[in-house]
Amino acid sequence: MASPHWPLFDLHITTPRLELRYPTDDDLSALAGILAEGIHDPETMPFAEPWTRVESPELERNALRFWWSRRATLQPDDWALPFAVFEHGDPVGVQDVFAKHFATTHTVTTGSWLVQRAHGQGIGKEMRAAVLHLAFQGLGAVEAYTDAFDDNPASLGVTRALGYEPNGAHLYDREGRSVRVLAFRLSRAKWESQRRDDIDVVGLDECLPLLGAERS
Image (cartoon, rainbow, N blue to C red; front, side, top):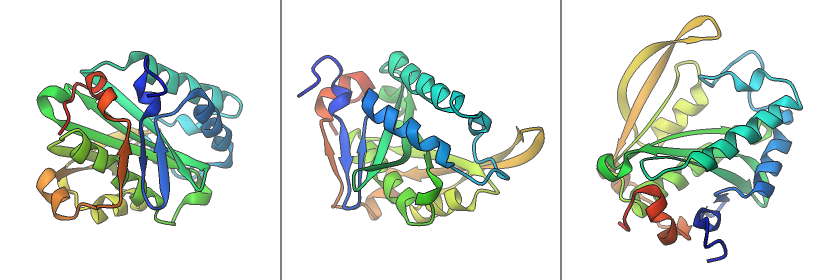
């Protein structure tokens, strides 16, 4: 274990195509460095909080502040893991997995973003599959949740391809306009029916107490 005081720094997930790492400051700097390339078409807004509307360099500084706050406020009953996603060593985005009171609920929620040059290549599905493997196989989760605006076909496509089932909907005020949010749920049984054997999680055991989890 290279990071005995904060073992999350040793946590990473690998797939045949990607590496997802709990980010060090160097990783966060690399992620901040790709934000100016753009994450989505300026005419759209896939996020509930329109954080991408901010101009550089405040965009990058805000992102760093946010990621640092996630690290500083992590507790076993309320945590967020913003995995830095690398393809062939290049940073391409972030795959988040969150939980509150995991020791009781055994549920997680996911969110993500990808730099625009990485869109449409199957990376979004691959990185979501990676954290679902962490959640179900590594942490023993029983359900995983996600949601997306109904005008975000890329995110909805990933969700449906991974076997999630509809779990309700509601209206949301997005930049002054009403838009529908679609919610989804993935059960452990559904994940088990299509689980992969080519995803590896490294460095998890030492992190379990920080996440309110036991080895599954």
